[in-house]
Amino acid sequence: MKRKFTLLILILCIAGVIFAQNSAKTDSRAGSQNTLIRVDGNQNSWIKSDTDGSASTNTQTIESENVAFTTTSEGIYISNVSGINKIKLFALTGQLLLNGDLAQGHFFIPVRKGIYFLRINNKSFKVVCK
Image 1: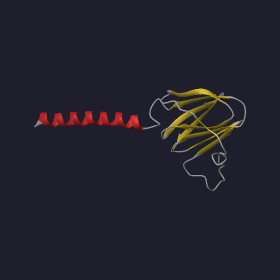
Image 2: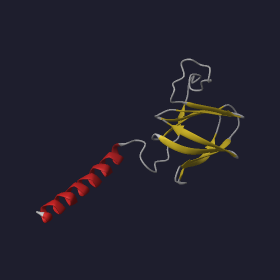
Image 3: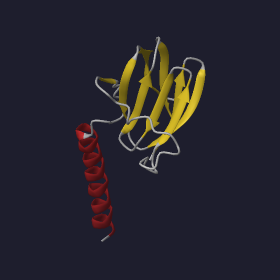
Image 4: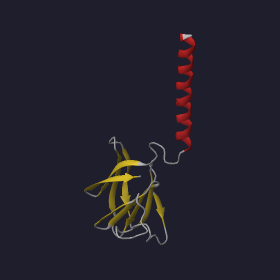
C-alpha cells in the first residue's frame, strides 16, 4: 500500500512538471522572453490621468520627464514623447528582463501579472501589473 501511494505521488509530480513546461511554451509572456513591441498610430487612450473616469482600477500611470507608462494585466504601455531614453525592466527577483533604448513613439512590453522594477534613464519605478 505504501509503495502504491509513493508511486502515485511520483506520477503526479512528474505530470505536474510536464504540464507546467507545456503551459510555459504556449504563454507568449513566458519567462525570459524579452519583447518590446512598437505600436504606431494614435495611442492617446493609453496614458490616463487619475481623474479620468474611464481608467480601470487595475492600471498604474506614471509620467516622468518625456516618458509616461501605464500598466495593465497584459503588460506595460510606454509612451516616449521625445529623445532617446535608456530602459531596463527587472523582475522582483532582480533578473534583467529587458534592456535597451527607446526612441520616440509608443511601445508595449508583454509581461505577466506581478511586480516589476522599471528603470528609465536614472529613475527607478516599482511597477505593478494586476
